[in-house]
Structure formats: structure tokens, C-alpha cells
Amino acid sequence: MKHYNLIFFLFSFSLIISSCARKGRPEGGPKDEDAPILVSAEPAYESLNFNDDNIRIYFDEYIVLKDLNKQLIVSPPFKTAPLITPQGTPSKYINIKILDTLKENATYTFNFGNAIQDNNENNPLENFKYIFSTGDFIDSLSIKGAVNDITIKKPKKNYSVLLYKIDSTFNDSIVYKSKPDYVTKTYDSINYKFTNLAEGKYFLMAIDESTSDYKFNSRTDKIGFYNDTISLPKDSMISSPIVLFKEIQPYIFKKAREVTKGKIQFAFTGKQEEMQVKLLSKVPEDFMFKTEFEKDKDTLNFWYHSDTKIDSLDFIISEKTSVDTATVKLRKKKIDSLSISSNVKSILHLTDTLTLITNNPIRDFDSSKFSLVNTSDTTEVAHTLKIISNNKLGVFFKQKKKTPYKLTALPEALVDIFKVKSKDTLNYRFATKDIEDYGSIILTIKKEVKHPVIIQLLKGDEVYKKQILKASGKIEFNSLIPDTYSIRAIVDENDNGIWDTGKYLEKRQPERMIYYPDDLPELRANWISNLTFTIK
Image 1 (cartoon, rainbow, N blue to C red):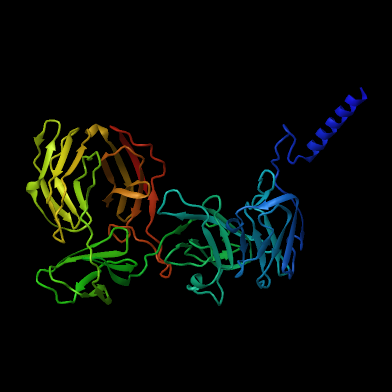
Image 2 (cartoon, rainbow, N blue to C red; image 1 turned 180 degrees about the vertical axis):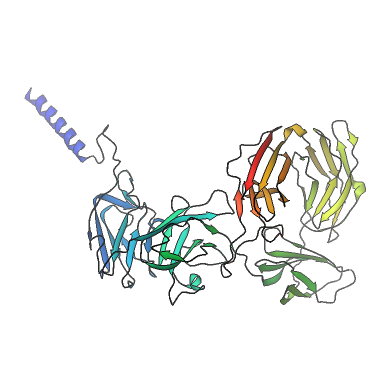
């Protein structure tokens, strides 16, 4: 009997020891939902006349640092980032090693955002700040407002908002070269708030930056700025949002290079408006060339062909007052093989044109080798062919509703600039839809601005259709594919029919973009959506 009592005692004791060794809450116990609590700091929080280079902050439990590089904001910013440890391992403290020289009579804020979390449940210590002053008092003024990127309906987060003191060292170019006096970010929304600011006059701006260096790079960053000088303590609330925009870069010719036999590319940066490429070399009589800008790329394609061998070509490239020259040595031996595709996969929408697209420019076509058939009754459909751009052949015909078609192109139907003929028989089957398969959006525009307005129908962030109005009236967008759309208006201040961006150095804001205030429901087939849009 004693033997069994001893076994029971040892078994029970082992369970107790095992239970004591387990980490975490007991099974069925309440979940820890409490954030870590600051216990103490050395030097103390809101210390005055601060002159240390090391800070240690203690908490009531083990904490970890999550996304510190994205979350931490030090204001005023340092030239050399502080060293913060430990990272990657739980600890009951944070150590901050300052590697920079502190400004005199300045209030410093270390805003950790939500980076500090408890080790067990990752409960964040939200918007935790450590503050000290190198002077006799803590600055306590604040500014708050909002940032708006007008080119997208749903703005991103994490815009950098910058504040520069307007003093004897301030000039317009400082935003390119120097970090601001204060910085904050729009973490959880488009709203921002500066705290612990000193009295004075300031210049306020925001950037959507590719690298977090708090300096404006016009090639990669978006910028927005407040036109008026900020005066503290007077201007603590900025009522109008800072509007972000991307500046147009000045045109710069980069280089010309042969990419394949018979094709030269002229690369440039910035916006071209009147770019022209002129051939300077003397060429054979049979020399033929075509040019076209590549869509969404800073490239001009130059295709050429001659039966006579040419070793190099000289060019002059001009854009308004800019003039460059280039010599391209011709060494490539192989041309691009001719490839042909269609803009239609299975459905040709009633407002679209059937188009054949080639990689090489079209020299000619043989209309006798094309046929278009109504496959429901095998009748031939009258059609015309037209080269609508260097690489596109349009097929025009009177479309019938709910009708299946087949376009056939026999071998040698197309000839490209290199005199290469299409080899294979091409067959494209497609059908049209009924008018009832589409929807319409009818807009009643109430225009309360003096300038013309450009009304844009958007799919995502892409402009699908547009119309221009100079007075209040109705706009109809018909034969729309069922989908989700949005609408915005551009106040066309210079009446040029396009949206014009801003320019920081000229202190010019972009033209206003106004989105229809409500989300449009998904447009259905055989549906008419009637909307009223007031533009103020």
C-alpha cells in the first residue's frame, strides 16, 4: 500500500512542476489585452537642459519592437539615425544611443508609433513618445491638418509632413538639400499632427517619398505645400488639406541605340511636347522609315529599311529649344519576326473597333486576302481595312447585335516595313452583345465654377471616358460594360482640355480634381444610373 502511495505522490508532484514550468496564461484564463506600461526612464521623461547621449526606457513587462524603421519618427530629425537596442529579442527596456549633435533650446520627440508591443500577445503601446528639451522648457504648440493625393480616390498612408522654420537661412531650395525642423507622418489616415512645436513662422509641406530621407526629389517624389506662412501659436488648425502632386520633369535626351536590325530607340526623360528626330545621313532612294512613341515609356521608336547596306546613321534630335545629335552604328544582324495579334479575344463591344496589332510597322496589306463572315448564317460581311497607326490595322464594318463573326487573314495578307509577309492563316472568332447587355450613366452637372470642367469616368484609377463642359448640363456615358466606375471632375483653369499639375518652385498648385462624393454601385446590364454632380 505504501508503495502505491509513493507512486501517486511522485506523479502528482511531477504534474505540479510541469504546470509551473509552462509559459503563458493558464488554459481557459483571460487573454492579456493590456499594453505595456512605462515604468521609468533615464533621463526622466520631459527632462530639461538635456545633454546626455544615452537614454534607457523601462517597461513593466517584456516588450518587442515591430517595424521600428517604419514606425519611429524623431523630430527634429537627426542627420545620423540613433542606435536603438535591443531589436529582435524581448526586453524590459529600450536603449537609445544618440549619435548626432543636439540643437540648442530644442524640444525633441521620439514617436515610436505602434512599434512597442508586449512579447506575449503583441498588444501595442499606441503612439508612445519620449520627449526631452535641451533648453529650459518643453515646447507645447501644435499643428494639425490633412493631406490629399487628388490623383487617387483612396489615398495611401504614411505621407511625410515637413515643417521648416522661416528664418535667415530659409529659402525655396532648402527642401531639396536639408532635413526639416520638424517632421510627422500620416500613419492611420490622411490626417497629421505636429506636437511640441516652438513659437515662430513656418513653411508647411508634405511629400510621398520613395526613400525616407525627408528631402524632396522631384524625379521620384510627390509634393504638396501650404501657400501661406504658418504662424504659431495662431495657426494651430490648417483647414484646407495639403494637395500632393507629381511634378513634370524637364525634357532631357538620354541616348540613341540600335535594339534590333532596323529598329533604333531614342530614350529621353521628362515630358516631350515637340520632340522630333531628323535624319542627317545621306541614304539610298529606297530608304523607308517610320517613328512612333512607345506607350507609357520615355522612348521614341525609329524603324527603317533599305536594300542597301548602311553602316551608321546620324540624327539631330530637337525638342523646342533643346537640340542634340547622335550617331548610331548599325551592327545588329537579325530583325524582329513579324507577330500579329488582335485587340479582341471573344467579345467585340459595340463601341469598339476590331484591330490587328503588329510588332513591326505595317508597310502594306492585301485586302483580297481578308474575309469577314457572319458565322450564324455564313454570309460575307462588307468591311473596309485601314492602317490607323504604324502598328495597327483597323477592320471597319456595320456591327449587328448578338452576332458571331469570324475574321480570316490568309498568308501574305500583311507586309511589314522590312518587306516580311505574314506566313500563317489567321482566324479570329468573336461575337457582339445585345444593347441590353450594357448599362448607362447619365450625369446632371451643376457647374458653380467659372472655368470649364473635364468630367472623367474612371475604371480603377484609369480614365475610361471623358467629356468637357463649359456650362451646366447633362452628360451621357452609354454602352458601358457592367463594372464598378467612379467619376471625377477637373477644373480646367487654363482651358486646355487636360489636367495640369503643379510646380513647387513657382508656388503653383495643381488644377483641382473633385471626386463624385459617393461610391457608385456596380453598374449592371440594362441599367441606367442617374446622378447629380455639383462642382463648386
